[in-house]
Image 1 (cartoon, rainbow, N blue to C red):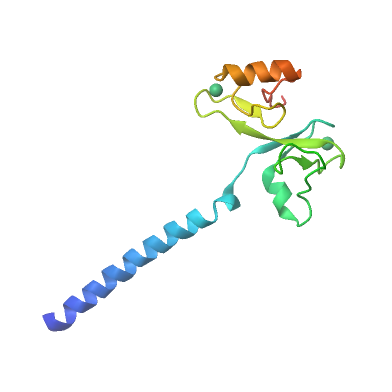
Image 2: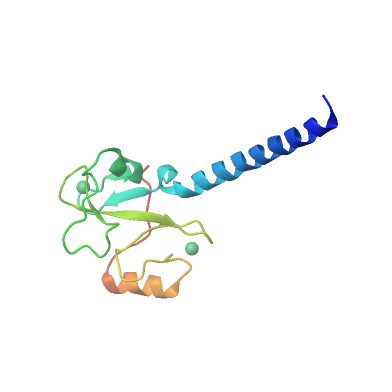
Length: 130
Ligand SMILES: [Zn+2]
Ligand SMILES: [Zn+2]
């Protein structure tokens, strides 16, 4: 094979390899919710389930009337309690329940969040069972 043919072939190979990498990075960015996993806790029955369970079947994600956010759902276990999403603090690793009180931030790191929880009479720290 002469160099005249080899070089364009080499370029084409590199270009397609780069395109493939860019494509796979883009598609992983485009579907971040597919891999998202965080717990939900029901304030009615105390059930804990993963957000992925809500996405398994259409119609599972039901936002109750009057909910503070469309991330709050009707519990899939008892069908009447409100289930709240749980977030993890990037600083201290505390898992805390969102939307239970007006300030949905880490109650350990954020004094305002701690005060808001106290005022609302709720404990926003999420405790895993067991
Ligand atoms: Zn429940
Ligand atoms: Zn924290």
